[in-house]
Image 1 (cartoon, rainbow, N blue to C red):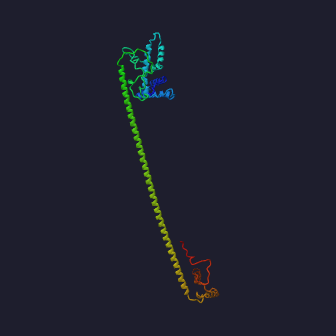
Image 2 (image 1 turned 30 degrees about the vertical axis):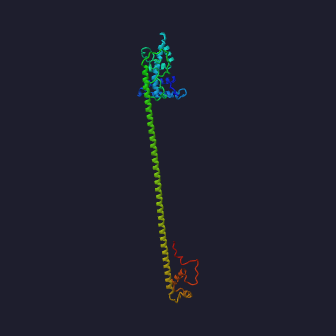
Image 3 (image 1 turned 180 degrees about the horizontal axis):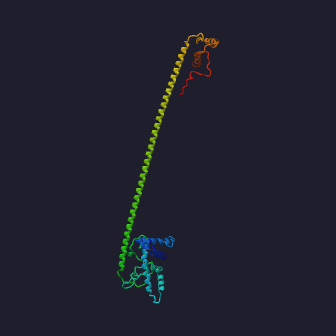
Amino acid sequence: MAPRRKKWTEEEERSLLKKYAGMVADGSLSCLRSRERRFRLVAAHVNAAHHAVNPSAYPFLWTWKDAATKVHNMRHQYLLAKRKLLALDPPRSASVDVAEQRGVSHWPNFLLYRSVFGDARLPDPAPGGAFDNDGELGLGLGFDSKPEGGDEGADQEVEEEDEGFDFNEVVPIAAEPPPATDMSSMKARNATRAEMRLREWEARMEERDAERERARKEREKAALEAEEEREQRRRQARHQWMEEELEWEERMDGRRQEWKKRVEGMLSEHRAEIEGIQARILHEQQSLIGQLLGVLSQWPPSPVFGGLSDGGGSSTALGNHHQLAHSHPVPYLSQMIQGLHHVTGIVQGEQRAGGDGPDDHFMVDD
């Protein structure tokens, strides 16, 4: 099924002419150097005013190339309408307003085009008649914005002088066909050249799209490889960090065990030293007590105190001592012997009170 031809409506033509006239009036059109920049704004204005508001009534979305081609075509529409007015041969008494109204009846935007672009002079008719071999005016008529068999006409790069005719935008005039000329062969050659250029343009577009697709795939592949490399580096860094953390923990455990063993060794050495000191102290105490007891046991009996082995001598001596009205003080030896009763337990028949033993006075903490 052939694609649908793109056709401008009268409202879209009117919007295009008004936007173009506004840009000419404010000087913005002269500031834009390229043809693309000029007509891109015009096409955007037409699309915003019609297609964006009512897509069903205005189904086509125009590009800058469509707008530029339409401006070129409207000149031929204007000349066709003007030639129709001359063909009607109005009487001389008819006013200019009547002629203009007839021009509007042929093309609704006749007056608007003339106000924007000015009046165009009709070309001289070709010899043999004013019509070409197609039954239409020999002015080229209206240019279609889409070559026959093309794809929507929006992106097709065709020169203005080689674009095809749009016979749907004008009303043909019945007339006798002109004699055969070389115009048909010229049109055929022009159409062939236009078709060849179109095919070359399509081939370039396909090659450009393929190149862009290859570049896009290469970029995606490079990005994927870079992401995989970053992920691998992250995994390696994480693995290395875990190994270092494990080694650090092992070193700390070894240091803690070594420190614990060292502290335990120091404690055991200290405990052994304390026990040795305690043993030496006890041995010296026992040796000293034994020596004192040996000295005291060999003490000669005194007429005053008596001997140590005489249980009643000390009491008799003490009784005599009290009877002497305290003429002599109690010697220090008796007090020392009384203190030794609590240490060695050498006095016979003496009971210790409170469970005191010889170790009670020599306590050393472990």
